Length: 105
Image 1: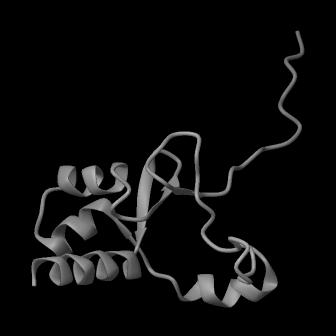
Image 2 (image 1 turned 30 degrees about the vertical axis):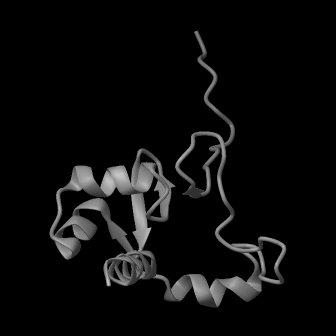
């Protein structure tokens, strides 16, 4: 018996997490003159982005991983879904902390 093997492997690109399943906000190219993610113009900028794991964000912020997951799911912290895990752009952590300090002052 000959079992057919898949002829092509399909891989999905990471989709920015917007906090709701099924609705993703584009990382770039939102119609405001920015190139789409993956275009030659954005390749240089994406290479400069440093992504952190949820554990790294939790350590940096000195909170639990569950707190980071809540922030991501509530849409307060931008994250990119990669498979079953999340990656958070480092600048998003800094923006969140800056905004949190501004609100408390």
